[in-house]
Amino acid sequence: MKRRKFLFSGGLATLWLSTSACLNTKMEHGANGKRIKPLLVETKVLVVGGGPAGIGAAIGAAKTGVETLLIENYGYFGGVASWGVGMCMNQMRPNGEPRGYVHELLLEKLQQFGPQAVRLSTHQFYVNVDYLKVAVLDALDEVGCKYLVHTKAVDVLMSGNKIEGVVVTTKSGLAEIKADVIIDCTGDADIAYFAGAPTMKETGNLSPQTCLFNVTNTGKFTNNNMKEVKQKAQSKYPLMPEGWSLRPVSNAKHFYVNHGGTRDLGNFDITDPFQFSKAECISRRQVVQMVEAMREFGGIENEIELVGTSPQIGVRESRRVKGAYVLSQEDATQGKKFDDAIAWRSGFMDIGFVSVTPMKIHQVPYRSIVPEKVDGLLIAGRCISATHEGASAGKSMGNCFATGHAAGVAASICSKENKVPREIDVKKVQTILMKDGVDLTKGGEDQDHKMAM
Image (cartoon, rainbow, N blue to C red; front, top):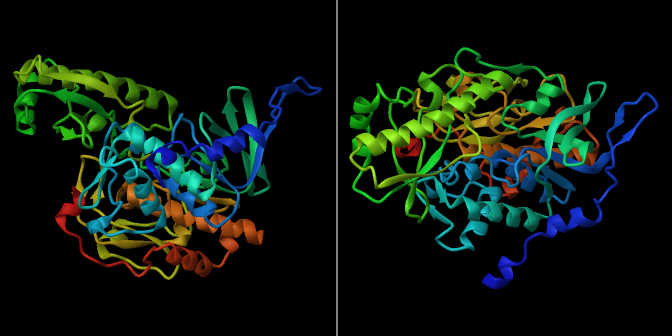
């Protein structure tokens, strides 16, 4: 496709929203005075949350020909990959090898914009986030996935033990979206929690949150200065983390900063609105203190500037769904394989600037993406069924894409066969995934230390 034609070919799914989905969302009232929530749209597969897991799920489902809708709270898709202001997308191509259709489709769409949009490393995609936001749209359009942004799920619709839809907030008020199958890709297991599915939380030991930010650096300030800055500035700027580094944004002249965030400032459970608010606000102050410390104590007052911050703190861990199988630290370190494998995870067990532990490539069983008790629901991303340590082994974006891909395929089979997720034949999921280029024989391989970087 020629570049000019490519640049103007997007918006196919958005066009659907302006035609067949323009429903009357005027809020009406019933006889008892309560507001009636209108039906916004019905679909076969609904994916809630447009981060890496949600993108993988949406592409995985739509590619099978099943009507799929992806909804997202923000005005763009990508999750922390997009709003992380340049943080690399880890485990997208472990050891430089393709790992499946959904990963490669996104890379293809990025590379169509040229080297300004993406560069590849050992396993990472280093992306320019604004190109990424458009590349995701192009990938969704490629498979015919419909999508809605500025749409946040706040409740669920249940029929007995089966979830049948979600309640969302829109500019027209509350509305309902109904679906045959719903995939929870919220990262925080919001949909599973609303539906009453059992969840797990390490409330006294959660991974820290981080407000990512960009800086310019026109001087000779290097990462070697950080320890010295910390020592000199700690009394004046007490919110600074233990250490941090400046890493270049893809083919740009500014840097992104990822760091320990709230690690030394308290244990914050972001599913508690008061703790979430406190973590967010203290992180905003922390960023300013870090930048001012570099300017004042790094000898570069006129050579470093704060460019911007992520729209919210990055959350590494919160609620996790309890499935029929709970992935553990032992599974990761031993490189465990399963008969019902639907994905594999690579990298290291990384508890966000707390500890980094070597692990082997290991598989994810289908049982870990199906919640206990609630039907009509699948889980993908960092909130699948896993322990605190097991979750840290799978939160890298490439691993979230992989479980999303599997959940999307499973959801499409459920819709076609009119079954709930726990009833389908997992071999059918595996067959489609393998046709999509997913190597389900992987598991047990040792990994080079570069895979942790």
